[in-house]
Image (cartoon, rainbow, N blue to C red; front, side):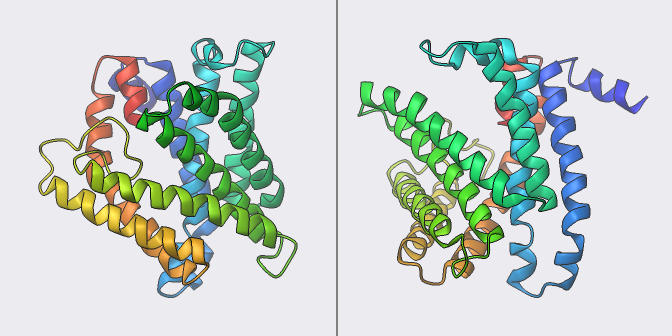
Amino acid sequence: MHSFLLAAFFEFSRTATAMSFTGLLLLLIAIWAVKSDVAQGRGLDRVIALSNLCFAIPLAAFGAEHLSAANSIKDGVPSYIPWHLFWAYFVGFALLAASLSIATKIEVRWSGLLFGIMIFSFVAMLHLPRLHANLRDRISWAVAIRDMSFAGGGWILAGTAMGGLRGKGGSLITIGRVLVAVAAIFFGVEHFLHPLGLPGVPLAKEIPTWVPARALIDYLTGAFLLAGGVCFLLGKKTRIAAAYLGGWIVLLVLIIYGPMLVGALADPSTDVKVEGLN
């Protein structure tokens, strides 16, 4: 009965329903896996304990999107690569596997490493050619740098699982930290140049008019990103900077993106639903 009601709410949008259910299922798995770390942690450690959870849930949703909308996603595969539909499904299963591994902290050294390589390959094969074709397009820059930071995040998780800076994962953590730092600084500047854009990754959409103090939110987000980016780049106070920046972004997801998601899921258009989830 519950499944029927939810399907009716999503108006039988297979992609939106698959993304939502997969994300919720991964959330439950991640909460179970992280509950002891949160209970035993103190102060910022409790926030940092949620890092794997926050990283894994979107991967699960995007994996479900690839599997349920493979026929449309395959069109994004470069023409010189054969078997477009195969790669759409392959990436979907890879994202689901990575999300489950990262959420449960099982073999993260491999899932984080391979996820980072996969995303960086997307940057090289998809985003950089588009960027080269139009160097003045800020959205192309933002998308390329965003995905580079995703790869960096995966490598940081892998390096941490390998023993941290003093272990075998030191090089991975350093590379990942630099990639995340570059993204944070770039996005921080973009928030000051475009102070009405949706906060976090500043693309074309603007903050809804029902949100008060829209410019102030963007300026604060820009300041958090710039401060965090500088700390990451210099390797100073990185743990505290990451915790505060991550906490601020999660707060924005809850108070701005959450209501936007509800509105998108209530829309009859599948494209609007999927965009809201993204």
